[in-house]
Amino acid sequence: MTRRARITPQEAGLPFGGPRRRTAGLRREEVAVLAGVGASWYQWLEQGRDISVSPQVLDAVSRVLRLGGAERRHLYLLAGLNPPAPEVAPERRDMCDGLRRLIDTWMPYPAHIMDRYYNCVMYNDAASAVFGMGQGPTTRNCLVDFFAAPLFRGRSLSWETNARTVVAQFRAACAADPEDEGFQAVLAEVSAVSPEFNALWAERDIEYQGQIRKELTHPRAGLLVVESTVMQVPARPDLLIVLHTPLPEADTAAKLEWLAGTDDGVRMLGA
Image (cartoon, rainbow, N blue to C red; front, side):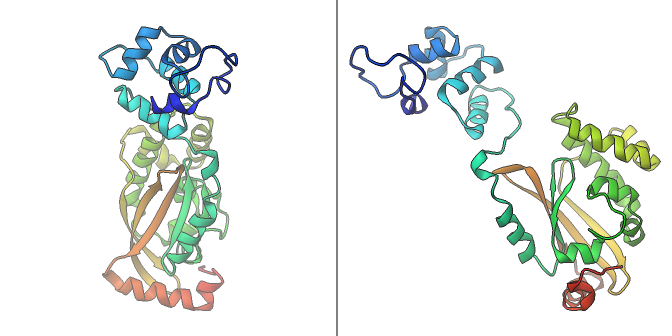
C-alpha cells in the first residue's frame, strides 16, 4: 500500500483527470490492470491471503510499483518464494572508493576484493608483498592463480589442504547461476591449465564462503600464518571482500608489520 501511494497515475502512464481521488497514488484496481492480474486477486495479495503466487506476477507488480532490487527481493520473501539474485542499485556502484579505503586501512595485513567470478578488483600493498598479487605471470583471477600461478603455489604451505575448500566454495558461487558466461569462462580457463582442479571439481563438493587458515613461506619474512575471512557488503553483492588476519603462530603479526615497513613491502617486491 505504501508503494502504491508513491506512484501517481501520470507516472504510471494513466490518463490525467477523472473523478477526485480519495487516496494518494494508484488504486488497487489500477495496479491490477497495469500488472495484468485480477483486481480481487491483487487485493488478496495486499492482504496477505493464502493464494498462489508466481514469480512472473510478482515481477509484473514490482514493475508497476517501480520497486528497487531490495524491495523486489523483499516482495518475493513475503510471498514465500525464493528471491531473485541480489542486484547492485545504480546509486551504489560508486562504493569502490570506500572499499579501497577499507582494504588500505587493513594494512599491514593483506586484503583484496574479488568480483563474483573471483576476478581480483583491487588489493592492498600487503597482499602484493605476501601473496604476490600483481607480480609475475598472473591472470588477476584468484581461482586460476590459485591453481596455476607459480609464485603463489611456491609460497603456499597449505595449498593441498585448502584446494578442496577453494573449489567447493567456487561451486557454491556458481550454483546460483550455473549458465552465466562469466562463470563458464573462468571454469574453461582453469580447467585448461589444472588437472588438479578438474579432479576436485568432479567430486562436486560444495561449501559456503567462510574462513580459511593459510600457511605460507615468504622469502624475507619466513613462515606466515594467517586466517582469511570473506565478507560481503549487502549493497554490493557482486563483490567479495577478503581480509587476512594474522594468527598467533610464527609471530606473524610482527612479521607483517616489519614487512610493510621495509622497502620490500612498500614497493611490493615480495619475490
